[in-house]
Length: 596
Ligand code: GDP
Ligand code: MG
Image 1 (cartoon, rainbow, N blue to C red):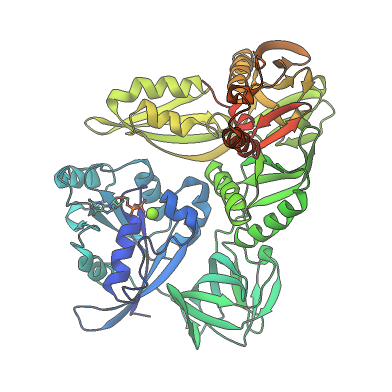
Image 2 (cartoon, helix red, strand yellow; image 1 turned 90 degrees about the vertical axis):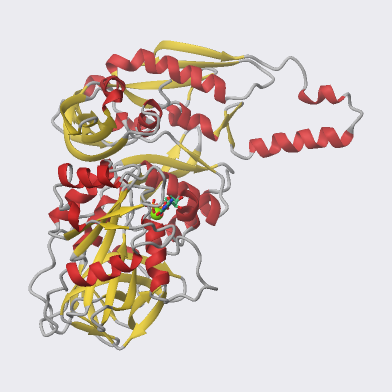
């Protein structure tokens, strides 16, 4: 155990975590050059394309240190987005230390701070790393200053690296050996292993990613998953070195995987504890929470016969993503589909993209909503995450909505812009402090509903990319919501309804009608779009009809041109849904939430 180190690299997005992980993996030669590809730990297409990590991964790096001893350095890679902060917390709970990576030209940002706080909560030993020192704009002294002032860490300990050129990589490996504590724990005690992630393999079933705290585990043992009280016989244990390397056993302190023929994903919950049936431990490891979805949206197939396909795809996707929840849903406008719960907007986008790519589906998603608590006159409490199900307002005593605490870091010249953005989103400024002489951390409390859609994009654009943002959900507060209905040619379209704050309702109704007017393509007849609250029309817009046939301009002569035009139209139609006589494109369902 003295020869093991378990650590993670934490960083604000784009500060170089994936690149640095690549260099560490290459430095210990566990993957041949032929098999190596960039961002090797991000193996999903979406992760590579978007440059984000969605699933936790671990890799065991064998390293012979300067003291001539062989060490096993377990690098646990964590997702870099607030949507997955619970997964991150379980991965950090599996570590004794962390390298806190900071871009030498950007300095400390909001996620750097949020990550640091989380690492401190888990009592991790933290080593600062200043990366991208090869950049001409690198300002090492300034970042050292921030490390001391903003983070309260010792800047003298900082390791300087360039993940691009390879400078300083050896110092990271050596630093892990020298400065991070080895795991504690006792192999002779009953097994206690923490699940920090899992994924599904079509041939082997669920592969559970674990950190052993006490005890040992080998093939043939019967394990108990404590939360669900489920028992399975272990087929194989091993470690990850990009590929799975089977081992005779895993012992206290180690990080690895378990295969036990598990087909039901709900049995392997992130944060649960695994012990042995024959010799159970006294109690589970602390910190288990059930994944709670916070953003909800309905998903419908574009093809009216696509429901079965969608059902199968969701079931399969769920095997790899235990935090996705869904149930059957129907809409008068869109037919059969599913109401889904997500950890956040990024999670929603990832699920949508995976369904469309990996299962080749064409989908309509309704505008995301948060979950409201509605207390009725008769004392009953309703939990509503679908505006279409909003009850008769005269029966409502009060409505509560979720609030977040947001930390925003910006250069101080953007203070006014950020302030007006947040106040416009019903935010309350709780505090601000100067981190360094021209950078501010501003703390706001905001309704979650106001940030789920385009808040982050807005923040980025008003701060020219300099603003960074992190948040956590704090509580539910009383609010005054009304349901905004959208009527298309006089018919209510349930899937376009949204809950809006009363004060902003007229304005929101107006923008929703304008947005829809831009999104809905012209057709042979006039299309009237109306916004209504409680039966009263508050806004309207019109899509005027075509003057003539679209193909008319081909003069009937050029057949191939005519066909091309029709094909182009058909492609465009793939993502449109007929609602009554009107074709509504997929993008329209999301556009109703746009604010300008
Ligand atoms: P992550 O989001 O933290 O995983 O960041 P990535 O590893 O994806 O890096 C973000 C960008 O910074 C990529 O374009 C990298 O090529 C680049 N990058 C990473 N490390 C360095 C470095 O040391 N020097 C320079 N110049 N660029 C780097
Ligand atoms: Mg990355």
